[in-house]
Image 1: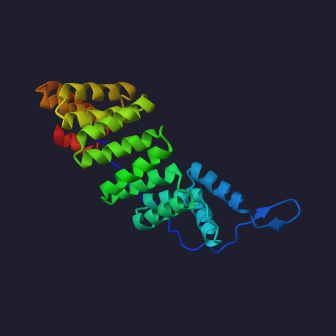
Image 2: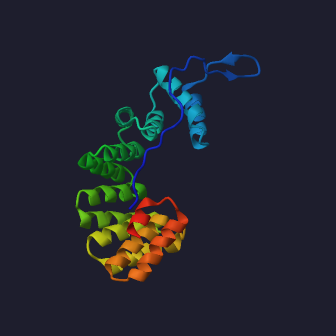
Image 3: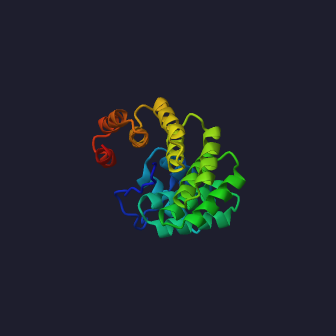
Length: 243
Protein backbone atom coordinates (compact mmCIF):
# COMPACT_ATOMS: atom_id res chain seq x y z
CA UNK A 1 0.00 0.00 0.00
CA UNK A 2 1.24 3.45 -0.81
CA UNK A 3 2.24 5.48 2.24
CA UNK A 4 2.80 9.24 2.47
CA UNK A 5 6.30 10.00 3.71
CA UNK A 6 7.99 13.15 4.91
CA UNK A 7 11.54 14.09 3.95
CA UNK A 8 14.02 16.28 5.78
CA UNK A 9 15.49 19.09 3.72
CA UNK A 10 19.13 19.64 4.77
CA UNK A 11 19.02 23.36 5.53
CA UNK A 12 17.57 25.69 8.13
CA UNK A 13 15.14 28.41 7.16
CA UNK A 14 16.59 31.13 9.34
CA UNK A 15 16.11 34.81 8.64
CA UNK A 16 16.73 36.33 5.23
CA UNK A 17 19.27 39.04 6.03
CA UNK A 18 20.11 40.07 2.49
CA UNK A 19 17.91 42.22 0.29
CA UNK A 20 16.48 40.55 -2.80
CA UNK A 21 16.88 42.87 -5.76
CA UNK A 22 16.57 42.74 -9.53
CA UNK A 23 19.25 44.28 -11.72
CA UNK A 24 18.12 46.42 -14.66
CA UNK A 25 20.18 48.21 -17.26
CA UNK A 26 20.05 51.50 -15.38
CA UNK A 27 19.54 50.77 -11.68
CA UNK A 28 18.80 48.20 -8.99
CA UNK A 29 15.23 48.12 -7.74
CA UNK A 30 13.20 46.06 -5.31
CA UNK A 31 11.15 43.42 -7.11
CA UNK A 32 7.37 43.52 -7.23
CA UNK A 33 5.17 40.96 -5.48
CA UNK A 34 4.54 39.08 -8.73
CA UNK A 35 8.25 39.03 -9.61
CA UNK A 36 9.10 37.46 -6.25
CA UNK A 37 6.32 34.88 -6.65
CA UNK A 38 7.40 33.96 -10.17
CA UNK A 39 11.03 33.58 -9.12
CA UNK A 40 10.09 31.49 -6.09
CA UNK A 41 7.87 29.17 -8.11
CA UNK A 42 10.56 28.86 -10.80
CA UNK A 43 13.12 27.70 -8.22
CA UNK A 44 10.53 25.37 -6.66
CA UNK A 45 9.73 23.75 -10.00
CA UNK A 46 13.45 23.32 -10.70
CA UNK A 47 13.87 21.51 -7.38
CA UNK A 48 16.01 24.28 -5.87
CA UNK A 49 14.24 24.17 -2.51
CA UNK A 50 16.80 26.34 -0.73
CA UNK A 51 16.33 29.23 -3.17
CA UNK A 52 12.56 28.76 -3.28
CA UNK A 53 12.39 28.87 0.51
CA UNK A 54 14.41 32.06 0.54
CA UNK A 55 12.02 33.81 -1.82
CA UNK A 56 8.85 32.49 -0.14
CA UNK A 57 10.12 33.60 3.27
CA UNK A 58 11.16 37.01 1.93
CA UNK A 59 7.72 37.46 0.36
CA UNK A 60 5.99 36.73 3.67
CA UNK A 61 8.43 38.92 5.65
CA UNK A 62 7.48 41.87 3.42
CA UNK A 63 3.88 41.53 4.61
CA UNK A 64 2.65 40.34 1.22
CA UNK A 65 -0.14 37.77 1.00
CA UNK A 66 -0.70 35.29 -1.81
CA UNK A 67 -2.42 31.90 -1.74
CA UNK A 68 0.17 30.30 -4.06
CA UNK A 69 3.08 31.30 -1.84
CA UNK A 70 1.35 30.13 1.33
CA UNK A 71 0.38 26.76 -0.17
CA UNK A 72 3.77 26.08 -1.81
CA UNK A 73 5.74 27.14 1.25
CA UNK A 74 3.44 24.99 3.38
CA UNK A 75 4.35 21.98 1.22
CA UNK A 76 8.06 22.62 1.78
CA UNK A 77 7.51 22.77 5.54
CA UNK A 78 5.47 19.55 5.38
CA UNK A 79 8.34 17.80 3.62
CA UNK A 80 10.67 19.03 6.38
CA UNK A 81 8.36 17.51 8.98
CA UNK A 82 7.18 20.88 10.32
CA UNK A 83 3.53 19.87 10.20
CA UNK A 84 2.05 22.46 12.58
CA UNK A 85 3.35 25.43 10.63
CA UNK A 86 2.58 23.68 7.35
CA UNK A 87 -1.05 23.22 8.43
CA UNK A 88 -1.26 26.88 9.47
CA UNK A 89 0.03 28.08 6.08
CA UNK A 90 -2.44 25.90 4.16
CA UNK A 91 -5.30 27.26 6.28
CA UNK A 92 -4.09 30.81 5.56
CA UNK A 93 -3.99 30.00 1.84
CA UNK A 94 -7.60 28.77 2.04
CA UNK A 95 -8.65 31.88 3.95
CA UNK A 96 -7.00 34.03 1.27
CA UNK A 97 -8.62 32.10 -1.58
CA UNK A 98 -11.39 29.73 -0.38
CA UNK A 99 -11.82 28.14 -3.83
CA UNK A 100 -8.13 27.16 -4.16
CA UNK A 101 -8.44 23.38 -4.57
CA UNK A 102 -4.71 22.70 -4.16
CA UNK A 103 -4.65 24.19 -0.66
CA UNK A 104 -7.60 22.03 0.44
CA UNK A 105 -5.79 19.00 -1.01
CA UNK A 106 -2.51 19.94 0.69
CA UNK A 107 -4.32 20.44 3.98
CA UNK A 108 -5.89 17.00 3.62
CA UNK A 109 -2.43 15.46 3.20
CA UNK A 110 -1.17 17.15 6.36
CA UNK A 111 -4.24 16.19 8.40
CA UNK A 112 -3.81 12.62 7.18
CA UNK A 113 -0.20 12.59 8.39
CA UNK A 114 -1.14 13.77 11.88
CA UNK A 115 -3.98 11.25 12.14
CA UNK A 116 -6.97 13.59 11.78
CA UNK A 117 -8.64 11.31 9.27
CA UNK A 118 -12.18 12.74 9.32
CA UNK A 119 -10.87 16.27 8.83
CA UNK A 120 -8.59 15.02 6.06
CA UNK A 121 -11.57 13.41 4.32
CA UNK A 122 -13.48 16.72 4.52
CA UNK A 123 -10.53 18.60 3.01
CA UNK A 124 -10.30 16.17 0.08
CA UNK A 125 -14.06 16.50 -0.44
CA UNK A 126 -13.73 20.29 -0.62
CA UNK A 127 -10.88 20.00 -3.11
CA UNK A 128 -12.97 17.68 -5.29
CA UNK A 129 -16.03 19.92 -5.06
CA UNK A 130 -13.95 22.81 -6.39
CA UNK A 131 -12.06 20.67 -8.93
CA UNK A 132 -14.18 17.61 -9.88
CA UNK A 133 -11.42 16.04 -12.00
CA UNK A 134 -8.84 16.07 -9.17
CA UNK A 135 -7.53 12.49 -9.46
CA UNK A 136 -4.95 12.86 -6.68
CA UNK A 137 -7.62 14.04 -4.25
CA UNK A 138 -9.79 11.02 -5.05
CA UNK A 139 -6.75 8.76 -4.53
CA UNK A 140 -5.75 10.17 -1.15
CA UNK A 141 -9.36 10.37 -0.04
CA UNK A 142 -9.57 6.66 -0.81
CA UNK A 143 -6.53 5.96 1.39
CA UNK A 144 -8.12 7.86 4.28
CA UNK A 145 -11.43 6.04 3.85
CA UNK A 146 -9.59 2.72 3.87
CA UNK A 147 -7.83 3.67 7.12
CA UNK A 148 -11.23 4.54 8.56
CA UNK A 149 -12.62 1.14 7.55
CA UNK A 150 -15.00 2.58 4.95
CA UNK A 151 -13.94 0.10 2.31
CA UNK A 152 -16.85 0.43 -0.13
CA UNK A 153 -16.47 4.22 -0.17
CA UNK A 154 -12.71 3.81 -0.56
CA UNK A 155 -13.25 1.53 -3.54
CA UNK A 156 -15.61 4.03 -5.18
CA UNK A 157 -13.12 6.86 -4.66
CA UNK A 158 -10.13 5.00 -6.10
CA UNK A 159 -12.19 3.85 -9.08
CA UNK A 160 -13.01 7.49 -9.77
CA UNK A 161 -9.30 8.33 -9.61
CA UNK A 162 -8.54 5.54 -12.09
CA UNK A 163 -11.31 6.77 -14.39
CA UNK A 164 -9.64 10.20 -14.41
CA UNK A 165 -6.08 8.86 -14.71
CA UNK A 166 -6.14 5.27 -16.01
CA UNK A 167 -2.42 5.09 -16.79
CA UNK A 168 -1.15 5.70 -13.23
CA UNK A 169 -0.02 2.29 -11.92
CA UNK A 170 -0.12 3.26 -8.23
CA UNK A 171 -3.88 3.75 -8.45
CA UNK A 172 -4.40 0.18 -9.63
CA UNK A 173 -2.16 -1.09 -6.85
CA UNK A 174 -4.18 0.86 -4.27
CA UNK A 175 -7.39 -0.56 -5.72
CA UNK A 176 -5.93 -4.03 -5.35
CA UNK A 177 -5.20 -3.35 -1.67
CA UNK A 178 -8.80 -2.28 -1.05
CA UNK A 179 -10.22 -5.26 -2.94
CA UNK A 180 -8.04 -7.57 -0.83
CA UNK A 181 -9.47 -5.98 2.33
CA UNK A 182 -12.95 -6.58 0.92
CA UNK A 183 -12.13 -10.24 0.35
CA UNK A 184 -12.29 -9.92 -3.44
CA UNK A 185 -9.00 -11.72 -3.96
CA UNK A 186 -9.28 -12.57 -7.65
CA UNK A 187 -10.20 -8.99 -8.52
CA UNK A 188 -7.39 -7.77 -6.25
CA UNK A 189 -4.92 -9.99 -8.11
CA UNK A 190 -6.01 -8.53 -11.45
CA UNK A 191 -5.57 -4.97 -10.14
CA UNK A 192 -2.04 -5.65 -8.92
CA UNK A 193 -1.14 -7.33 -12.21
CA UNK A 194 -2.50 -4.28 -14.06
CA UNK A 195 -0.29 -2.03 -11.92
CA UNK A 196 2.74 -4.21 -12.74
CA UNK A 197 1.82 -4.17 -16.43
CA UNK A 198 1.82 -0.37 -16.35
CA UNK A 199 5.07 -0.22 -14.37
CA UNK A 200 7.07 -3.48 -14.02
CA UNK A 201 9.42 -1.70 -11.57
CA UNK A 202 6.72 -1.00 -9.00
CA UNK A 203 8.08 -3.01 -6.07
CA UNK A 204 5.12 -2.60 -3.75
CA UNK A 205 2.73 -3.94 -6.42
CA UNK A 206 4.83 -7.12 -6.70
CA UNK A 207 4.81 -7.51 -2.92
CA UNK A 208 1.07 -6.82 -2.70
CA UNK A 209 0.52 -9.39 -5.45
CA UNK A 210 2.55 -11.89 -3.46
CA UNK A 211 0.33 -11.39 -0.41
CA UNK A 212 -2.81 -11.92 -2.49
CA UNK A 213 -1.40 -15.04 -4.17
CA UNK A 214 -0.50 -16.43 -0.74
CA UNK A 215 -4.10 -15.95 0.42
CA UNK A 216 -5.26 -17.68 -2.77
CA UNK A 217 -3.04 -20.65 -1.93
CA UNK A 218 -0.68 -20.05 -4.86
CA UNK A 219 2.45 -20.24 -2.71
CA UNK A 220 5.07 -20.75 -5.44
CA UNK A 221 3.74 -17.76 -7.41
CA UNK A 222 3.60 -15.77 -4.17
CA UNK A 223 7.27 -16.53 -3.52
CA UNK A 224 8.21 -15.39 -7.02
CA UNK A 225 6.29 -12.13 -6.57
CA UNK A 226 8.05 -11.32 -3.28
CA UNK A 227 11.44 -12.13 -4.81
CA UNK A 228 10.62 -9.82 -7.73
CA UNK A 229 9.86 -7.02 -5.25
CA UNK A 230 13.19 -7.60 -3.47
CA UNK A 231 15.07 -7.72 -6.77
CA UNK A 232 13.68 -4.27 -7.64
CA UNK A 233 14.17 -2.87 -4.13
CA UNK A 234 16.75 -4.91 -2.17
CA UNK A 235 16.11 -3.05 1.12
CA UNK A 236 12.33 -3.60 0.97
CA UNK A 237 11.88 -4.94 4.52
CA UNK A 238 8.17 -5.78 4.14
CA UNK A 239 8.88 -7.95 1.10
CA UNK A 240 11.62 -9.79 2.99
CA UNK A 241 9.23 -10.35 5.88
CA UNK A 242 6.46 -11.52 3.55
CA UNK A 243 8.86 -13.89 1.81
